[in-house]
Image 1: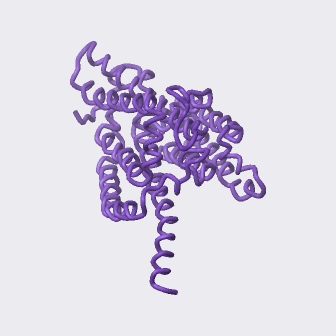
Image 2 (image 1 turned 120 degrees about the horizontal axis):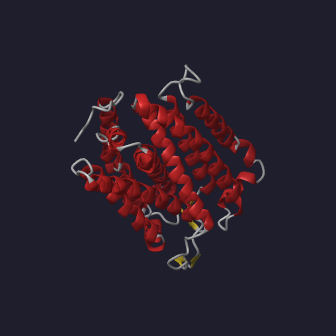
Image 3 (image 1 turned 45 degrees about the horizontal axis):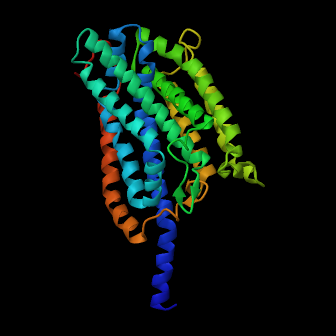
Length: 354
């Protein structure tokens, strides 16, 4: 084999594998964001259920030391998408700018309210509490709508979006937005079971069980709906022998759902219940749902036509940024692990970070 042929073969190989590697990096970043910031958004979704301001203080204090670091993963996912798949990045921002803008505004309101509420008094304190809840719900709902819009397929002609301002707005997108709000609420309830004791702990267990039923019902409806979308990307689950080797995903999901239902029971019903299990099982449920989504969409970033190779930047650009990420990613993982280790354990009503 000549040197020129070796170079060409290596270039072709990198053009194939670099987009796959970047899809893994971006997928990992998005999953980490959903798992870590999801429970904070869930606290906002559950905030209206707090009995009084003191109980809401307790709920927010469980996440106060670590919540802002969780958004690093969202930045990583967005920056990685722009660097590695600029066509997909441009398509998302041009076609889904309304739900993206709503998500960003919701996150801003959530973040500002999180800090300002502890400084306010009286009506101002209650108003910031309402802003924290509203921002969390809007951000969670918008993320579900964005996800659904990508899964159901964007109307495109000649590689350009032709759906107009509201082309993403469908019943499936609205239902998926509501499903993610429910899922984040379940994450928040599991976090409170893990981090609190007493009255709030028992109330969180009471919230968790109905939310388990809700999220499992949503997952079943979404799973049944996916094969009939215009993008047809999820139809591969039912083609040939695919169902056999993909079957472990829904089976594991059902098993985790049952374990979550069991371990979310109040202590009075099951003395063996461990406080960490509801949160861990919820994380596993989200991870399985994410895995099933990636398996169904592969190799598309924006169905029905934009694949990871069609949206990829030049291999030289992807390789250059990937080298930098090799140094950055361990730092992010280390900081995240360190912060959660430092602030591990139960948070009492008397604890505060403001």
